Length: 113
Length: 114
Image (tube, rainbow over all chains, first blue to last red; front, top):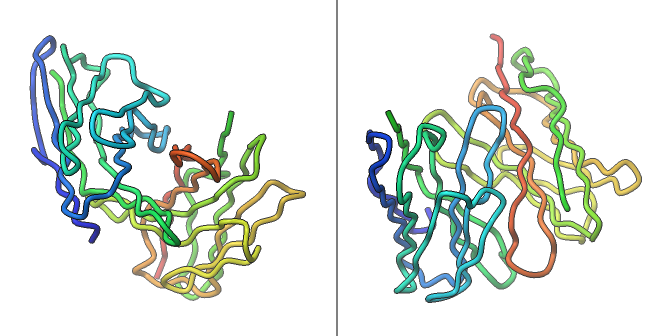
């Protein structure tokens, strides 16, 4: 357990509505990530952060934005949700030093109707 | 660009049999390689990782993987399958330096038959 929580854990929303997912960590790790998991695609990186207010795009960033105003929180926003964004979203943190490994949160299942 | 191919989206073995899950990668730079396991309705758990030290890497739950540069492979093995090994397994690659942006394979679902 790397002290990662995600909220909400489940959400159903309608096309065109904004949605924000929250990732919270308790151990002050510098790097945080958002991935989405879809059948047949494994996990794909959406955005990541390397510090407060420092973020960058991943492989599938279109339609998503992120913010990190505090070390412990990394928010993922879908400005106008589409059905193609129905997925399971995972947050991860990277422990540095000798470990240098990513640990994943429990996931958020998002359904866009 | 980096990529990962996992051969076989579903693998089924008998309890006590050898488990072999295949992973081939493509990377223009020396990679880090990882195997993660996902149990139903849970997040991903690290099984093991290769970080350019020993080519044979031992992980948790009796799993191990061997990095073979000439074959660009990082196959996961376990000598004797247990019912509790039933899960989905993901191979991933990243660059050694920088943000460790993981690129995952599509996953292999392992079923254990009694």
